[in-house]
Length: 219
Image 1 (cartoon, rainbow, N blue to C red):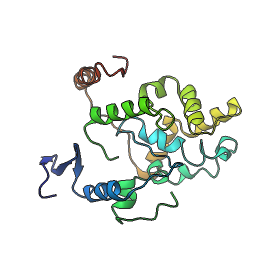
Image 2: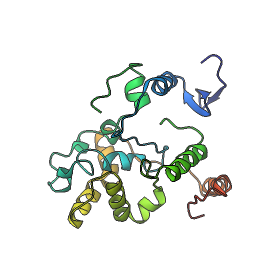
Image 3: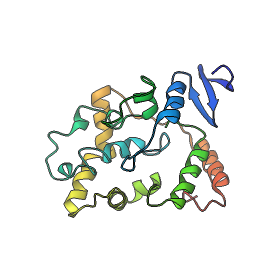
Image 4: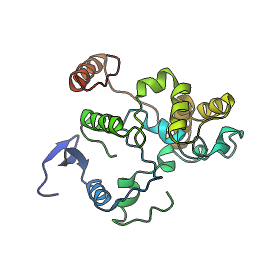
């Protein structure tokens, strides 16, 4: 890490590696993941950036929701999210595995960088390989959660058979329920430190960065 560009941000030392900024403790795991991880055809990787609906997706994709039909029908009494945060149900490659072991056993189972580069990279790859990469917008998820969940389930090869199954999954993974579970389990209150002025500047920057890409967020 000694040769990498470094800045200090809120008392944290951040290192720039291949265009992304990493906390020092996270960087070795990211390097090992890139060097050693070999994806299989049936692997499912979530590559959303922070604060873009990641927790919601981590809750809705694994057991017992889209990938396991049982969660579409039962009463939720054995719902693992009652005891485990979505981050535990869908662990990070860099932090959950490669940080501990450079060659972990992944048979049983992103860090962030420049946000706009991350999003545009995923967007362009989804156009090139739509059968392998499904691009979702947080704005669409909030506007039409039922429609987006149904499309996601079809992409994952687990289409819903009945409308009530969709409703069950949406109930399990509703934002209000996840927030309540997070507060009850960890004592963490949801927070947002963006002012209206900050939001406006971010919207302008996003529109400028995405101009000409074919991707927009309704600005």
